Amino acid sequence: MMMAMAKQRYFLGCVFVVLAASCWGLIGLLGAKLNQAGFSGLEVASLRITLASLVLILVSPFVLSSLRVLQRKQLPLLSMQSLLGVFLMTVCYFLAVQHIGAALSVALLYTAPVWSMLLAHFLLKERMSLSGVMLTLITVVGVALCLNTSAPLNWAGIVFGLLSGFSYACFGVLGKKALNNTPPTILLYSSVLISGMAMLFMPFFHSAMQKIFTDMTPNIWMVALMIAVIGTLLPYTLYTKALQWMPATRAQVLTIFEPLTAVLLAAVILHEPLGWPQYVGIAMILASALFNALAQPQNSIPSNA
Image (cartoon, rainbow, N blue to C red; front, side, top):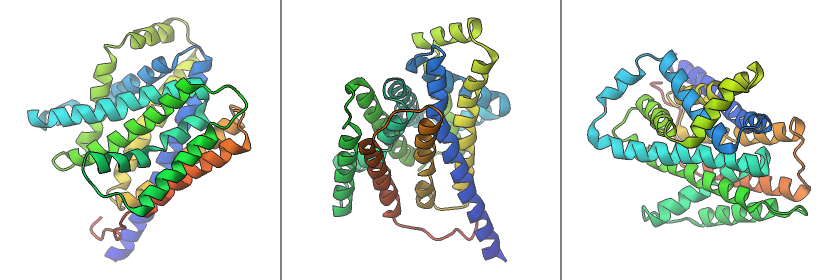
């Protein structure tokens, strides 16, 4: 009976992760829509983080009170995890979307597993396996193919895309360290709210607020709320819940639906012009990320889920 219930929860966890990844895959499309409405990449990033923070406080009144349990010694690591893994990643990702489109941006975002291996090797002195080296080479070749285009390269977009992948890796590495003495829910709250507070002091936040309160239509308001709720809070909530019912390594494999959703929407809705080298390069980067997740030690289904 317990095993049957654990399997049901495991299946539900898989569904939650797929839904979360699909929601994350919408971010590039929604960001591109805001770019078309006159928002810069920086302004889109500020809207995502600040609106997500506001909605989180409104729907979860106990958020601020729950953060009071944090000790002062936890704040430096949590702040670094939020500012590098949420603030910087969001800013770089939306700048990449503005310059090179959603499809290539999400592909470069998924260089994160390679950055994670490099960070672990050079900072944590972890040994890099042969498979890790091969996956790194596959990713490098994939990025090179993404750059194989007859159109002039937008190097700013490429750099921002790679920086978003690096920041995404920092989010995972620092988050894993923070979880040693911080509950997952508190980590979620702090990562969103710390970046939200930091964003309030950015000049592009104020220009975004001026635009959205003076010049924008209800449709743009809807897109902005969607990027905060459907593209941020909902997937993070689903993913956090899923991790209670399934191993993190299994969940990581299923997040491949994020870039697949982003690339499909970019091609079908945004009509982004990609040639076969770009599609092959994107496929290589995503395959490298998938194989990296599959290569992680697998845990059994938790019987006490």
